[in-house]
Every structure is written in structure tokens, then in C-alpha cells.
Amino acid sequence: MKNNQDLWTDVDAYFADLLVHSDEALDAALRDSMAAGLPPISVSPAQGKLLHLLARMQKARKILEVGTLGGYSTIWMARALPEDGRLITLEYEPKHARVAQANLERAGVAPLVEIRVGRALDSLPLIAAEKREPFDLIFIDADKESNAEYFEWALKLSRSGAVIIVDNVVRNGAVIDAATEDESIKGVRRLNEMLATETRVSVTAIQTVGAKGYDGFALAVVF
Ligand code: SAH
Ligand code: DHB
Ligand code: MG
Image (tube, rainbow, N blue to C red):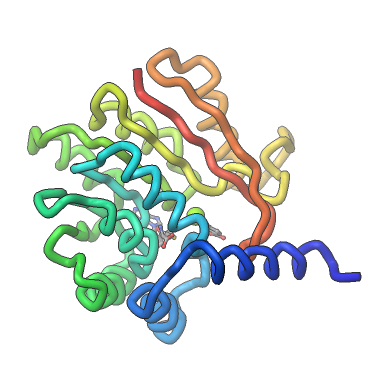
């Protein structure tokens, strides 16, 4: 009998092969991210496709991502944009941004995407000051310590009806450990406690298993 993780990985591969239809540019983005020594923490293919479908359902024209890494999730979402769409993605590590830029170019989405290098908490006020059109979809997937602040910015920068997705809100179930000393779990819990009383959104959280283990995401729609 397989252990749970092996089974989750195999089922993820089964659906990836059958339904997700990732392609050479997406696979190469993961390969080159790995070869450059980036951590293997991109969304899975099935999760990338979910982000893509959510962006399509939203008819998103403006997307904001916090946490680019090698641009894998970025490619999935950018591919949902119309020709005049725009995706801004925020990344702290210049090396990650360089790998991502090459991956975006190979995937043919670079003209739609702007990577802003720096701490997201520095970039977000600048974006607000630019008085751009509000975002239709926001994906939060960077340092978990700042999740609550990122969500606040997401609310400021989004339109009514926008969708906000926050990755990694379960962390192997650790999210329910009120005594945790882990700063990233504390960050996830602080976000959840803020969401509990947040009247500007309707929100749920979904646990997931798959190649990336046991985790989950929060999904919110802005009133
Ligand atoms: N969304 C990506 C994975 C992102 S991993 C995908 O699914 O393909 C998280 C990324 O957030 C890492 O690249 C990390 O360098 C970046 N990050 C961490 N702290 C950050 C900060 N304060 N500001 C911006 N990016 C940050
Ligand atoms: C980690 C970060 C992520 O965004 C993720 O999806 C999985 C793991 C991490 O920092 O360990
Ligand atoms: Mg993540």
C-alpha cells in the first residue's frame, strides 16, 4: 500500500496528464527554475490551471501577484489575459526575477507582464500611488508573515467583484496550532483572524492534497 503522499503525487500526475495540458514553456519554466537553484515551491500544474481558470471566469484584465519565484504561476495567469491585459508580479529576490523574466519570454507572455523587484510591502504603496485601474484578480503567494498586510493592500487595489486567492493557508494542518512559534504559520493565522471580521469580502478556505503535500488556499470575493 502506498503512503498517502505517493498516492497524492500519483493522482496529481494522473490529472495533470489527462486534463491540465501543461506545455513545453511551462515545463521548461519549472526545469530552469530548478536548475537555477530556486526552491521547488511553485504551484502545481493543477493549481496553476485553477488560477488560469479563475482568471478566465473573472474575465480578468488586470492581475496582481505577490511572489513571482520563477514565474510559473505567472505564466498560467498571464495566459488568461486578453491582448490588452496586464499582470504585475512582485518579487524580492533579483535572481528569482531574472529566472522568471526568461521563463516569461520563452512562454510568450513577457509583453503582458511586469516584474517589480523589491519587498512587496515597498512596491504596493507605489502601485497604489500610480492610480492604476483596479485589479480583477490578486494572487498572494510570498512570505507568509506579511499575509495580513498583503490582503489589506489587495483590498485597496481591487475592484468590487475582484477575486483574491491566498496560497498556503493550511501548511500540513499547522494552521490550527494556536501555540505555534513558526512565524509563517503565525502569519497565516493572523490573516485568518483578520478575515474573520472583515466585512468587505466573502471568503472560504479549501484544504488540498497533491504533489506539494497537504496545504490549501483561501478564496475571497470583494463586495
Ligand atoms: N507564485 C510562485 C511561487 C512564489 S514562492 C509560483 O507559484 O510559481 C514565494 C516567492 O516570494 C519567492 O520567490 C520569494 O523570494 C518571494 N518573496 C519572499 N518575500 C518577499 C517579499 N517581502 N516581497 C516580495 N517577494 C517576496
Ligand atoms: C513554501 C512556500 C510556498 O508558497 C508554497 O506554495 C509552498 C512552500 C515554503 O516557503 O516552504
Ligand atoms: Mg505558495
